[in-house]
Amino acid sequence: MDLSTNEAEQRQDGSAAVIPFPARPAAEAERLRRALAALDRALADQRQAVSTWRGALGDLRAAMAGLGGRVTTYQSELDKLAGGVSSLNARATWLRDWADKASHTSQPKE
Image 1 (tube, rainbow, N blue to C red):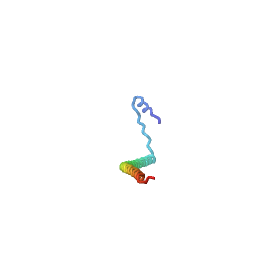
Image 2 (image 1 turned 90 degrees about the horizontal axis):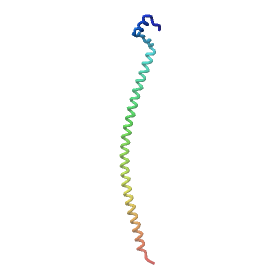
Image 3 (image 1 turned 30 degrees about the horizontal axis):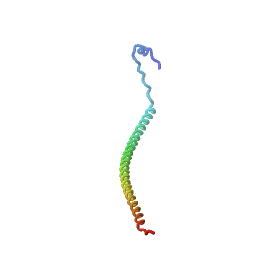
Image 4 (image 1 turned 90 degrees about the vertical axis):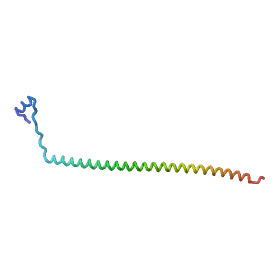
């Protein structure tokens, strides 16, 4: 762009010349509007996906807490069962030993 002599003088005295931006063609403005609309839709979709994901995480957290409680209960029941089996084993061993002694004392001596 050529500056006229008057504009050059205005610049020398410290003031600025205003240079208008070239007007954008309507097609570029429409393309930009469509791109922004597509970006808005993508952001809305992403917000929905994040919201769904957070809901799924909450469901998973609740399921894991329930599972943890059930595992603790199961472990407690197994501990009780192990105690019962140990007690039965001790009783069975005692009965075997008693039966062995009883059979040795009731046999006739030769």
